[in-house]
Amino acid sequence: MNTWRSASIAVAAAALLTLTTACGQERSGEDSNGQSVGNAAPANGSYGDGYGSAAGGGGTEAKAAGQLAVWKSKKFGDVLTDSAGFTLYRFDQDTAKPPKSSCAGECAETWPVVAADGAKAAPGVDPALIGSVAREDGTEQLTVAGWPMYRYAADEKPGDAKGQGVGGTWHAAAPDGKKATAGAGGGSADEAGEEATDLPGMSTREDPELGEIVVDKSGMTVYRFKKDSAWPMKSACTGACLDNWPVVEPVDKNDTKGVLKKGFAVFDRPDGKKQQTIDCWPLYTFSGDKKPGDVNGQGVGGTWYAVSPEGKLVGAPK
Image (cartoon, rainbow, N blue to C red):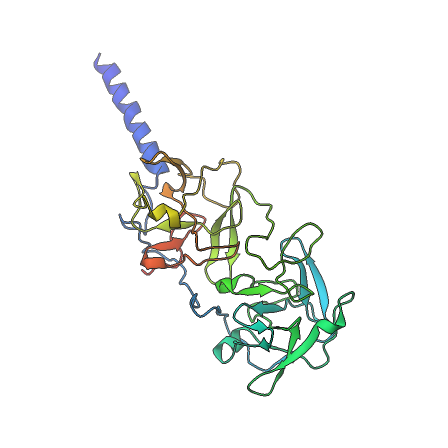
């Protein structure tokens, strides 16, 4: 009888240990409130001013684009490039009618302007779309369909598009000056949410400011709430909070790429919703993010942060 009782206790203890480990009890570097105190990457740049940062930030001298070309990207569709194959960008805070640039000073170090001199339309694109706008320093900046064109200092080689979606205001330009976006046969679109995606239920992307972060099946940024807990699994976002921070619905563990499988569990919320977790931390998206690449929820209230592939807070203060 005693032998049976001892065996039962041992089995129960082993089961508890397994559950505890799965739900991140062995997580070092995070306190009981979920605040990251480890080596989370700092959130470089400002999401309020609309431009990011680039290590070494290039100078402000405008370089000519030469013969424009088109890069056919599976992710972004038809993307406009300069003669060297570097991606050209447009800025939401600029205007096309009339053409006007809102990027100067520090912004222009991160987003070097493209000089209009000698620029030629990409093959098959109406040359009438090519124009220029005079900047305050006297530089004639290239415009396409009225939109001022820029490069991104963090793009290191042809085919890089690290500036796509920075601050929710910078976008790779399509050959017609619109925002580049993937779709049937390529093309472009200006409406939020039109970017096509072919992603697993959960995966990661490289954000130019935050590094590698988790995204859902639509490519939308996934967040964590510092007031939640992983053990026991508990969400402090209820009621009206969920209008702004919808839960991430359950994802098949096999329908993921690049995310931690330990503690990849479904949380049965008291309100009846089922919520996906990583390392047992409840996951959310943000209603203020309108398209893939947006990170408008980052740092909101000092409690909401993007999620690393290991389920940790990205960019949270130590």
